[in-house]
Every structure is written in structure tokens, then in C-alpha cells.
Image (cartoon, rainbow, N blue to C red; front, side, top):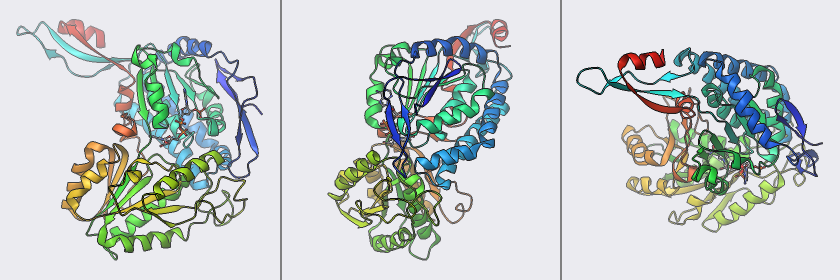
Length: 512
Ligand code: NAP
């Protein structure tokens, strides 16, 4: 039953009892997770020696080819990952977001690197800048691979995508990766590593199932830590001496009270009115709302709030909750019973600021499973009229939950949006260009990404909640202050930038 870790090129089981991980749908135990007795120091040494050396022998396009091969291996066997994802409550559509999303992300990175990075192991970032009048002295910047590792710590909700979006830039940068998946879905991440391992150079990837206590003590200025999870864990890890004293790079993606804003022009009958309601339903139900980018705060013009409520409720009434794969099911389960309790507690706090207008946190009709044994929850729509209340802007219910809030004056919106204190994603749904401009410019400083949704772009739009590998994913403040993805920016973020100075010929000889 014990989930094995992939360390130093082989699969090893930890000792001790382990943390039981239950099937989100049936409650049966899927696996036990423990890292007790595993030699994590040896894994770090193996990464630094074997992994770093193997990747160091490859140029950027060669690393891109390895990444592509790993992604194609996953593609070939993705059904296995869908099947495992169903045990974590994910419908086929949810699993596609994680599995296909992850594969697609890796493939985009491989392609960007093949086209945009040199056939070399270093990047000359700029042309020489003359630093003397006589032309004998100049400077430029080079990017080289640090002598370290990439430790990635992931949240439970995207075991495949979360791993691949961090693995891709690290691998391209030449850094070996150690993955620490979240315990509730570690078995899915581990299976993905089993599928990929042969396509990757030795030591390029390792995985620890279970806790990684002591590992931070081994990290320092040459290492990169990529964290996704809650604000509380981010704060704890960020204050570790590995980061505060030894300056390991630390990138965090944390909670986010993302918003969507409906424009005053988008009255019923306008395409944007329906686009807004449809997007809200998508964000509430995909992955049962367990998405860091999901819309938690929906701002609508006060004179439209009843119409919007009606439109959203009509759509919610069509949501069928149940076992992934069972007939007609459109929304699966939360990852586990503990997660359901967390969401219920968060909803109770949100309710204290307003009213619950759709769904019952304690009761849901379920198709193909037992509503209590499985971690099922009804989609829950709240309405808070007193927008000055802190709860809707601060309490993240990490499930199928969203709160409608009215606004009167457009000029109030930037300040209202900013009460989220930094978000990963926001959207503006309107066909009024002046309104869109005002909101995007007013909200940009608080966001990592903003989607403008209207009738012209809707057909091709990738949607509010989907991070794109070409674009920045991350957000200021509460969202963690980090930046992932963003095309090759993410590769550069793993490399060391060094200014080199000297005569032009000497500089040329270094970068040739
Ligand atoms: P979490 O409890 O903070 O855990 C995140 C990860 O940190 C897990 O792998 C966890 O491992 C690990 N961890 C916990 N304590 C640790 C420690 N002392 N040392 C090293 N690792 C430690 O978050 P979660 O419940 O998995 O995820 C839900 C949260 O993540 C939500 O708040 C959501 O908003 C956020 N999230 C953000 C993004 C984003 O991109 N910004 C994406 C997804 C989720 P264990 O599981 O073994 O405890």
C-alpha cells in the first residue's frame, strides 16, 4: 500500500505507518504516504552530481527534446492518469485540465526553447554595451545554470500540471528537479513520474512522497524552490534560513480571491451577460472549484444583480454532482473529506457577511456514489450586498463557491478589486472599451493576469481560470508575489544572470 518515492534512480518505499489517502469518491484507502527512513540528503547529492552533470552535457535544444519526449510518453499513457484522477474526484474534463494541460504546457516549453534558445549551454542576453570611449572596454550579461537543484512543492489540486509547469523551465535551465507532491494526490504525480522517468536524463527528476523535513537545511544560494499552496505554508517556508539566510530562490503561488467584473453595458440579451454567467459556472464547477484561479468574487452592476443571480442559478440547477464517469455527472468530488470540512468552514464565514442563495453546504444529491462517504459538495453561490465586509475579499473557500457582489459607481471598482490584496487572475466582461480600459488599468497592479472577455474573442478565449504557458502565472501580494510560466521568462528565472566586463574580443571568446 505504501506509495514509493523515486530517489537516486529507483523506486523506494518509506517505513512507518504512513498517512492514509482515501479515494475521494468511495472513501476506500488508495495508498499510504510516508518518507520515513528515506535518505533525502543522498537524493540531493544525487541531483547535484548525477542530474546536474547529465543536464549540463545537453544544450538547450537537446534539453527541449528530452522534455518533449517526456511529454509524449505521458500523452501515450494519459488514460492511466485519467483513471487515477477519478479516484481523486476528478471528472474526465477535470482530469484533462490537469493531465492534458500539463502535457500541453511541457510541449509549449519544448517548442519555445527549440525556437528561442541557442544551441549552447549559456545565453548571451544582450549585445556588448561600450563602457569606454576608446572601444576597448565593454560589458554584457550572460545566463548560466546554477550549481543547484530545483525543489518543487505542489498543491493537491494539479498533481500533473503543477509538476510539469515547474519541471519544464527547470529542466530547460539545466537544473535537476526534486518533486514534493501534496499528500492527497501524490499517487497521481508519482505515476506520471513513472511514465516520464525513462525519457529524462539520469537524476533530472526525483520524487519524494511524504514530508521533506530536513531537506531545506541542504538548500542554499544555488537552489530554486517553487512552491504552490496556501498562504500559511508559503509564509512558513519563506521564513526558513535556506531562503532568509542562504538566499535560495523562492517562488510562491498561493491563495487568491480572484474576481470577475461585469460591465454596465452587459445587460440581459447582450452576449457578454451570458458569457459572464457561463464563465462563473465553469469556474465554480471545473475541479469542483479547487482551482487557485477560480472566480471567488463576482462584481456586477447593482441594477443587474437580480438578473445575474437568476441566470447563474438557472445554470447551477443543471449541474449534476456525482462519481466521475457516472451518467450525466458534470461535477465531481472534492479531493477528500478534510477538504470538504475546510470549505464548509470557509462558507460559514462568508455567510456571516451575506446570504447563501444557491446550494446547501450540508446536503447534495449525488449520482453514482454515496454523498457522505465521498467528498461531495453542492455548488454554493453567495451574495454579499455590504461590499465593505472583509469576508468575501479575504476568505478563500477552495471549492465550488463564489460570491456575487453589487457595485454602484464604476469609480469604486478598482478599490473593491484591490481588497483581494493581490490575485492570480481577474476578468472583465464587457463590450465597452472605455470601461474595459478603466478596469484593466485600475486593477493591473493587483493581478498577474487579466482576461478581457467579449463577443469578439469568446470563441477562441482560453477562459478566466486557465494559465497559459506563454503568459505569466502568479500574482502580487496574497497570491504569493511569484511569477511562473511566462514563456522563456520562467527559464531565465532559473538561471544566474552575470554581468561580464572586459575587452570586446575577450567577451566574445567567453560566449562563443
Ligand atoms: P498546503 O497545505 O499549503 O500544501 C501545499 C504543499 O506544501 C503540499 O505539498 C504540502 O505537503 C506542502 N507542505 C506543507 N507543509 C510543509 C512543510 N512544512 N515543508 C514542506 N512542504 C510542506 O496547500 P494545499 O492544501 O495542498 O493546496 C490548497 C491551497 O493551495 C489553496 O489555498 C490554493 O489557493 C492554493 N493553490 C494555489 C495555486 C497557485 O498557483 N497560486 C495553485 C493551486 C493551489 P503535504 O500535502 O504533504 O502536507
